[in-house]
Length: 279
Ligand code: GUN
Figure 1 (cartoon, helix red, strand yellow):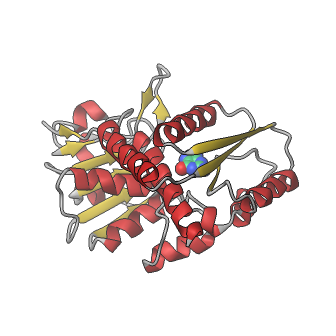
Figure 2 (cartoon, rainbow, N blue to C red):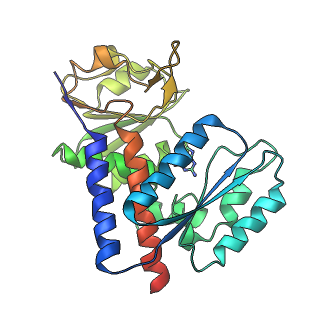
């Protein structure tokens, strides 16, 4: 039987630390959250981010723009936020409507305010190990792994998924802690066999029931980054929890695992942005 990793509890502790630091130093910290269009899931995420800001003593500024917002209008807003001294962090919720090129918007965000760490400058800094911001979801996963007392050094780690937001930076953070890292994706041959090598298995695929018991080594730490809806429209991860849980030593639930951590790390990055800008 696996121990369930309590992402809510770990994230709560991080948010309390952020709040305590802001109060102790009497800081005024602001996060601009930009959402374009009517994506329901994005709406929920943005509301949760705003609530976390409140809990941490961070001022949030919401910009909810209509679906038909042009790329130019959005870039102009980002430039205005870049120049606004009350705004320490800028978060543009993805995905954006199809007529807006995400890459162009991310490029417009000042790297010093890029609390998602999506800008190419920040991605490059992560690769060479000279970073200020860590990407929120992978950084949250590292915190959860650390919370189990597992030492990553020398471990076989398998990441399923190679997105810019999760898979690729996740592999980098594991590598920084001296893990042996394999990234799997839709072209990987013998996926189950590769995954079975993992002492630490991180799934970021976005498909319900993707990770089955035959893909998991006995005693592995299993981290589920997926956020999907199953046939009954219930929130679920990538991992077939009921059959994988008995084999794992530790496992994250969905909801209540990685999700709350992403937001806690965003709060930490926003405080870090304030510190960077005050130097
Ligand atoms: N959409 C899904 N995850 C994220 C995230 O971490 N940041 C932003 N900006 N958009 C997202």
